[in-house]
Image (cartoon, rainbow, N blue to C red; front, top):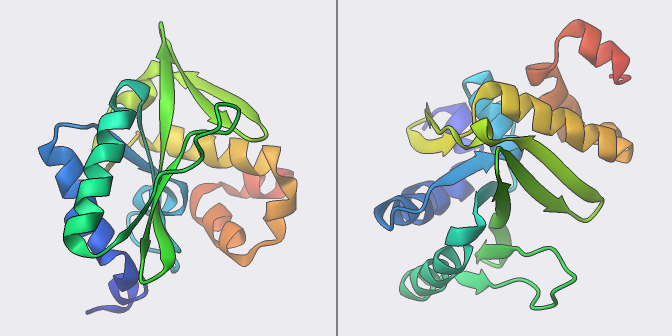
Length: 187
């Protein structure tokens, strides 16, 4: 196994079990976050803790049921997330006791898509739901288009400037931002 894939081998079950099962169930998913940045860069640029995805809110309950059953079959731990209406909906999967997968719903309204985050909603064009097939180190998955991966990253660091000090965010920033953007965000 080469270095770029070996640094993320702990995510193998996500790429080889969870995401293919979502596809078989015809649930559209979109990888974002650190693995989305890797997709933008064209290769893994660092070790990623987990794989973050979003699904349409209409698919969220079905996807949660699928994850629950999949985890029972494969010895993984399913965490359904908060049942409190005020909390952001989320589902997670732990592999060997460590969170390696998280899923949130997005809400499509007319020509926009709304992400509900703890620090406020983010709104994107419905074009964020155009799937791009990626293949990194033999791992096959779908993301939004590059422009949306970049916009989501910029929105994330703008909403949470405290995260700019994290080494992983600095690595991601160098992979996704141009020199002027790096400078404007203080990297």
